Amino acid sequence: MAVTVDFFLSRCEREFTPTEIILTAADKFHAEGLRRCCIDIAKWAVSKGKDWVIIQWAGDGGKPYRIPCWYASMENPSDKITMSIADENPQGLEQMLIIPELGLDFNGVYSNEHPILFYDFEDGDIVFANLAAVQAQQKKAKQLIGSSGASLNFPEEFERRVERIWNGECLRNYENEAMRWWCDPNSGTYRRKRMQFV
Image 1 (cartoon, rainbow, N blue to C red):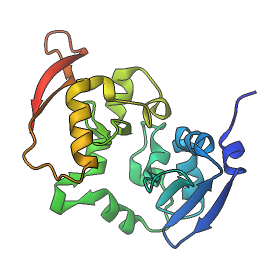
Image 2 (spheres, rainbow, N blue to C red):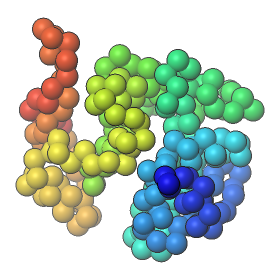
Image 3 (tube, helix red, strand yellow):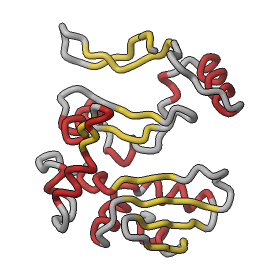
């Protein structure tokens, strides 16, 4: 029998704020279970009228998982994000998905024809995958979110970067080399390619 999101929800404490649901899991196993059910968790939170879910446990070291509720739309590619989330406050939702000062439009990112993956800078976990990335990887979104993207990093460089951050250093104009998914213009397929970043 498959373990469902209800199983993990039944094993955590719940706290509701005006915009968030804070789930305190019994241990890391249950926290990971909640994180791997992130799309179902987001759907549940949307049904409660919330924008975020915070998943924490006693030993999380002050780094809880944050799940935005627009993940609820990730398995329905025909719908726009704004149509997939509770209709109670569409203007507030639109403002949440567009951050002009950072040049970010999450509707545009989500619907972009090119694969886009966001990684946690410290541990390399995938925290966001748009529709094109899900299709390119030939996986479901819930299989990608929370999985490790560290295979795209070179281990020695990645470990040095993480150590510098944990030691309190702030990295500016940081140059590094890593692998990324690249679309071959001749075949239209995606493959890994070595790239330079700042």
